[in-house]
Length: 224
Ligand SMILES: Nc1ncnc2c1ncn2[C@@H]1O[C@H](COP(=O)(O)OP(=O)(O)O)[C@@H](O)[C@H]1O
Ligand SMILES: [Mg+2]
Image (cartoon, rainbow, N blue to C red; front, side, top):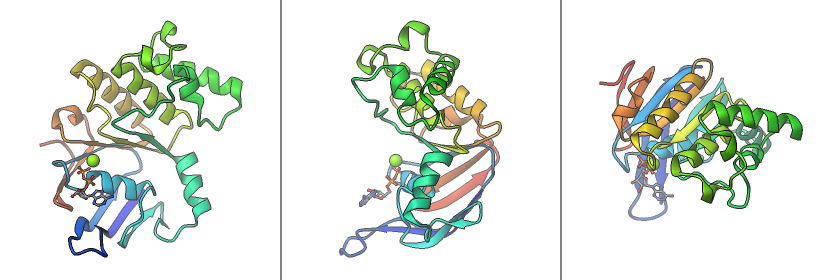
């Protein structure tokens, strides 16, 4: 599904102090499954995910998504991919404060309103929200509940790829495992890419990629 060919990202290329966030990374990811990207802070994990999801453009090299070069695609096609094929979950939830859990989940939905609502209720309850929480605004929900709403929102358009950057970083263990369990389930017929610096939460990953200082230092089928 994703193929990185000498994928390179240099920040501040025009300055004296260049930052080599990705150094000629070669990597292939499968069509489905849970892929864990691990590595210390500053190693280039987020940069790699943003480049794969078209949020950032490489300095050199290329990334192919189903054979399509992400370096040369049009803005229109990039928007299509982000809207229809990719879903995003970030460390911070970025929910809209004055909207309820349901409204937040359907905010970027491509479905007609009544269908979107039904779907949101199903996804939100599947992921562990209680009926009475569905009409609460984010400030009335716990951190774990807010992050579940963010994940539900990311799943609304059935993305083929779900990108999650440290999705459990602000959660306690119980909520972290619940969220990871749902992502694992989703990865049965979709690709889920999860960044973390905590190995224990991606014990169930089908593949893991270790990043060290802008390079892939290890790739494996199970967490070491
Ligand atoms: N927009 C930016 N401009 C300059 N340097 C950046 C930018 N974003 C990230 N970096 C640097 O690139 C390197 C990799 O960052 P990042 O991909 O965020 O790593 P990680 O997600 O593993 O913590 C770090 O040295 C970071 O400081
Ligand atoms: Mg990061």
